[in-house]
Length: 156
Image (cartoon, rainbow, N blue to C red; front, side, top):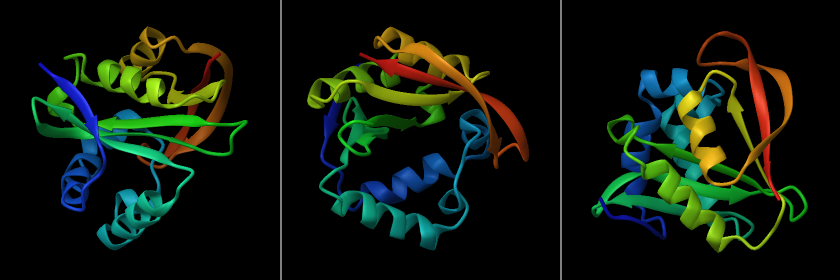
């Protein structure tokens, strides 16, 4: 499967909504925001993301199909990665390939990431891309309605 990144197109946002509003994926990611549950807020969020010059955001393509998105955001000394891959692509190397390509676009180091401590798939993706666990904490996970353990990871 060929994994590529490209600029986000307006038409990608509807596909992102389908990916990010899936309950199984929300539960796995755990930490969701209000825009994950409201299409109007979701669209407004994406307008803001795509217009922010400090955010590097890309659509992830798997054999030319929109498989998700990946981004780097935050101030220069606290850059953080995030990604969301459709559940249909989980376990197929899509997230790892996409994250490798994204971090190659981003010169800033260190890069940071956060993941639910029980999200083994995401933790494996981050570790395969060179991130190491640098902290632990508790955070409220709206998708689970409870506090969870969260890991902080860093790529030097």
